Image (cartoon, rainbow over all chains, first blue to last red; front, side, top):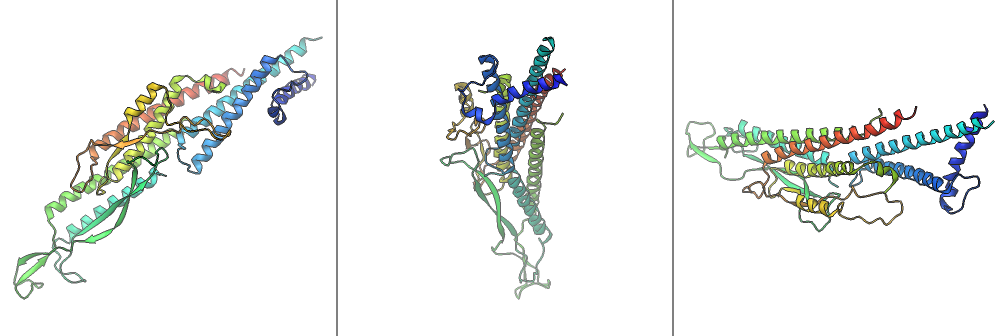
Length: 108
Length: 142
Length: 136
């Protein structure tokens, strides 16, 4: 039970990095944040995932509404990339959460 | 915008119409009497190309893609062939019978070309569908 | 270039480009075949010379401007130019489409498209499997 709560706390900390307010004020540091370099990397990575998913949405919409230049293979590729990006991010996130849990467990 | 499936469909329609018209010409090669009077007149299809700009062209380009458009069917208004057959029910006072201006050998050749054209359009349609299918398969659930 | 794009190497972009070209060429071929008996119609094809030159110069194609920050990466949207195709002889009515040539090209083109699509599919599937299997 205790582990779940701390895991959730770690997840929330990561989520706080990419809340909408955060995207506008990229310079403002967040309290209790891990090292600057890693956080920035994580931020960029999550923004990338958003972009890739937005591209996929755009490609699919363009395909369905038959906009010129929107081919079905491009839409499929965009979807697959978005899926891969999300899976990757998901994988990284769960590893981070587990790492936090591991650390907190060793603290007696 | 150039819609490949639309164009392929138009091509198939035009090709099929062409075949039907040629078939009609062959069937009526000897028809000396028609409801509108006179011998059967050879029919021909009139097609024009409707220019279809693509997504990837600037308007300055000379070359464009096109969609075939059937404008209509016209009847050959040239003088019918005359054969001297005084006993024929459709013979004129001078004993000549007016026959359709249809060269059967030429029409047979036209029919073969028309059939090949239709088959080519069918292959194009299949190719389009196959490519769409493969493109779609790039992304799948599992 | 996003982090995700760094996962994919030049082969992947090459495959995407191959797909785009094959797709565009299929449009030219369909235009030609459906108008094979249209009087006055002139056969078209892609300008491969220009495309090759662009590839060597490192350009992705006709440059499209990103005027809106919401514009996504548009490099694959740019297309090849159409040029007059003089492979076929001109008939009496001005049409110069040679059906046999078009059929051969279509078969070739379809092969290229489906090959590129298959390879791309396999590559993407590989990534997905790699990521998923790293879960545990």
